[in-house]
Image (cartoon, rainbow, N blue to C red; front, top):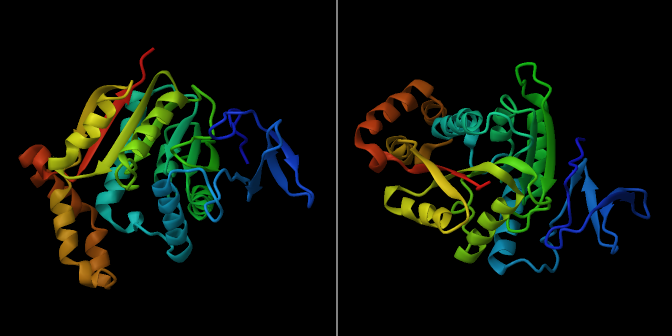
Length: 296
């Protein structure tokens, strides 16, 4: 396991040290005695099976996500839907353009690790966090099996909440929040808290990449959320994927058939639909991508 040098207790930001519990299992402890499990080399900072101080909607969504990842191999089927594969590739290609010399990169809401693995092809150190322990363990295994073009990428995995990140201030050069702020279905106050936490853990001059599935009539919601924060918006991209999602809806009832799966994984078809959609600009996009930077 790669041990992150800047792990802290969520909320209090108290320092942590490695220890063992009475059974000899590894834990992380604060000087005040609070203890956090380390399971499969992954620090666990949330436990939504018990009482929690988290906002009710945050706690509820976290429990839902954990249940989904326990019951489904890949809840959003990112690897089997070419529009999602292209979105991950777009973000992973964009990231080194806006942050060419990072220290650590945070994949916030890493799911089962597809984007983390792609980012690992460009950056030497990736921290991947999700609120679902099952998702994080799947991401850990996935990143072990993916070749990174000979690069010795350090991956570190953490179970935690985006509303209370277990990282010290100014820990990351780049934070990627992929399909998060709205895809996680958080309240407006929780969304603002996530953005505030992203600002806190970014180094001065560091950048954040946000993507969300909203549709062009709702893009302003994400833009407003960012513009009302200390971040400075510097780039907006549209992924021109509306036609692809329209096509996907036609196969909803037969999505498990071999024919439907082949069509949904078809890269030339997805690229062709994107080229056509580009003629209509932002209106032909379901996804928006926003780059914002923390001021020095």
